Amino acid sequence: MKTKLLSSFTILICTVLVTVANAQTTSKYDFVPGEKVIFYDDFSQENVGDFPVMWNTNGSGEIVTSDKFPGKWLQLTKQGYFIPEASDDFTDNYTIEFDIVFLSNTGDNNVGGVNFFLLSAELKNPMGGSQPGQAGFKMRPEYENVFWNNWSEAREWQGDDGGVKFTFNTNEKYHFAIWVQKQRVRIYANESKVLDAPKALQAGYKYNVFRTELFSEDYSPLISNFRIAAGIPDLRNKLITEGKLVSYGIYFDVNKDMVKPESFATLKDIAQVLSENPTLRIKVIGHTDADGDNAANLDLSKRRAASVKDYLVKNFNADAARIETDGKGETEPVADNNTSVNKAKNRRVEFVKL
Image (cartoon, rainbow, N blue to C red; front, side, top):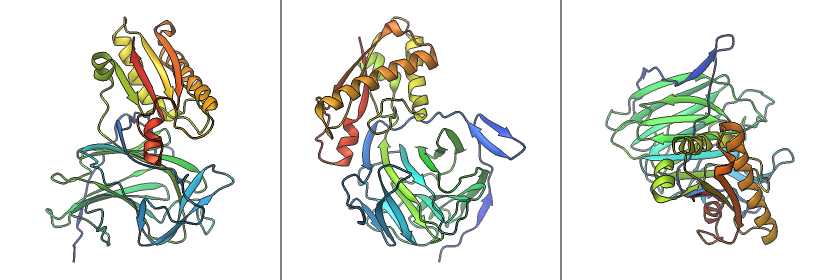
């Protein structure tokens, strides 16, 4: 039996504004997603009522739709773990993103009943218990707090723990983003940094399994738009040296051209490259997947590219004369449009050095 002895540990929260009145923490959104998409699922190819084929569980869940939240969602309905079966190597540096709605079956406004794990474990042998795998990190939102702890076999299942004040509410949609850089874990919700723990993961392990666990059926959360991307994009090198940057860090709603706030950090870095290289001129090119009408996709890709330019000019004072735009719609795919992962790879924005 694993013995759990957790010592006190102070989380490092970087560049935060602390509001003493309600002990909330917020910070500038600086999340940049990984450059290689290795898993994506928005459940668009699944039938309502089914459990998704690219996931594993020892509990129960089903694909649902919602009048309030567009698209298809995986609803967790019975206690157990829920694991996306991403078999590619996460690498030491990767990002995990998903949308989540915490639904309460009791009318409670506060969130509970859900754990999130990063595990060093075998994908085909998820294991159970409070400390699965050879090593792990667990994050638990609960009422006005977010708690975490870690463990490993090498330390006889002991580890560190911490917590911060951050309130999640039921019946609201949140975009979760988790950024892993070796031992460091940063977690964001919408445009706020929730925590930044530089030693969240114990050294000597590769954390290649993400696991959501429902431990109370008082809650039945919804999850969608789940993406894992490996590697840290070197925006400056790719744009200046290689002459082309492919970005998955610029976000739009389905069939919309407005740049979402989660794109801030990626576009800030692009603007910084332009500022540091005053002779640099670029072309912004939008791309879509092959779903829908060809002409509509072409028009959408052009409008999205134009929106990216406008965002750079309005938010970072980029020189509009040095930025051209274009859109290719679905005409230049980088992968076959036959799976949700490949479609996610095709939905991208490219920056080309002129």
